Length: 132
Image (tube, rainbow, N blue to C red; front, side, top):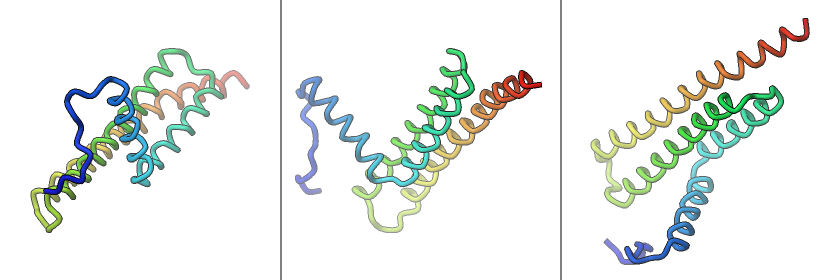
């Protein structure tokens, strides 16, 4: 293994830790088109939620769902980077780990879609009922 990777000192301060974390967010957004797609979907959900006048509980559910998808995507991206660093051959164990990481993102996304449909669908139904 080479020493050109910026491994972190255990004695780094809080500002450095936050800077490293935000660097990780930037890498996740920059490196992964799927992260950008999830981010765009989240923005759309937030706009629709604002237009439908969600209450605090509904906002909490949606923010939790959105956060879960973005966190799963970040962990999957981290796993992909680690897999590339460990083994660039066609290793079935690494392939399985990457597939499981992708499945975690899929499960989080599907759960969020269902939750979003329940929250936004109910709110939309309330709005439509008030028109009649």
